[in-house]
Amino acid sequence: MSDRSSPPGPPARAEVALSAKGLVKHFEETRAVDGVDLRVERGEIRGLLGPNGAGKTTLMRMLFGLVRPDRGSVALLGKKWDWASSPMVQGVAGFVETPSLYPYLSGRKNLQLLAELDGGVPDGRVDEVLELVRLSRMADRKAGQYSSGMRQRLGLAAVLLHVPEVLILDEPSIGLDPVGARDIRALLLSLALDGTAVLFSSHNVVEVEGLCRTVTIMRSGQVVWNGTLDRLRAEAPAPAHVVWTSDDDRAAAVAERDHAVSAIRAAAGGITLQAEQQALDDYVIALGREGVAVRRLELLMSPLESMFFELTGARSSAETSPADDEPEEETDDEKNGETGGADAESLGASQ
Image (cartoon, rainbow, N blue to C red; front, side):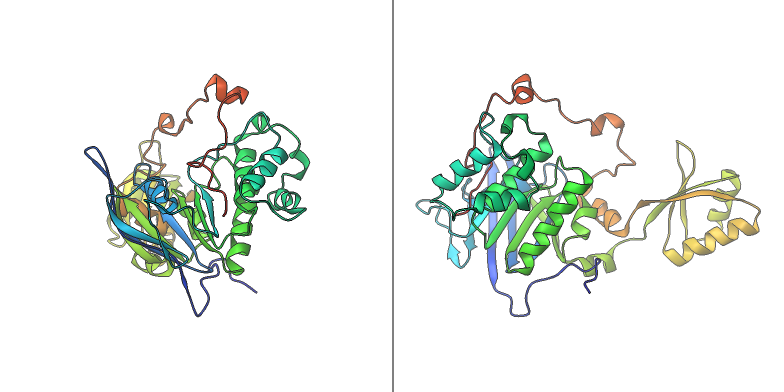
């Protein structure tokens, strides 16, 4: 029986499927990627974490050969990438940013066209991948009528037309509901168990924690942490909680006497606490002895989330205003599904 807290890692005799060394990329005065080294082995799912603007997408574009680095090298499945002449390495698939599709074609026709452009696939493969991503019932609807989550599923179906040896995905669960995100995680785990090397980017620490054994964290174009999640947990600071009590003034006074608990009064009410589990337990017991009732206690930030924000300097959801989280509005053309087509930059079909 597998342990959900420990996703499967690479095979015992690991083989490097993706290797990047010293990648550097400038855009005018901006150093988007600054000396990045990266390694993904067969059967490994590696999370690429970082806030917006960290350089994750630019790095993935270089791995696909869509952007030429100023310095550095990339090897995929043992073949060194030659930006001057090399086509896409066979066995590599994925997408960067949101997959672009032909909105006036059905989901099925999109896949059939991509399969034809990519040299063809066995009979029935299109139906297989539609079933894998749970789009069979909607396969004959125009892609322009799909929700963002359905477009994401169709993009994943496209890169699975040929079973990839290396899969590179930029925010694969964005736009998906919890059930859809769960399905994608299960699919990636299944691919990894069959030996596929998976690299996916995210800014969601919880998503990465449930899927990966290894993680690379970026900030301002640089790798600020690289290694296993077990080591990251060991190095992470204490988790943060919010507590609401019958008397927050007395609760704050109790915390001030306890050097193992850091407490800050929250502007919206309650007290933000940072403490290891045993210290938190002792603090709650102390509140009871003081006659202070705990009315609610919530986890604000896990140790891994605390570590992520510490490493990247990003703001947590507790520090952002509601306006920061509002999604960008779609253009009228995007809403009507009347623009765009499948392109190499956003949808890397398997070779």
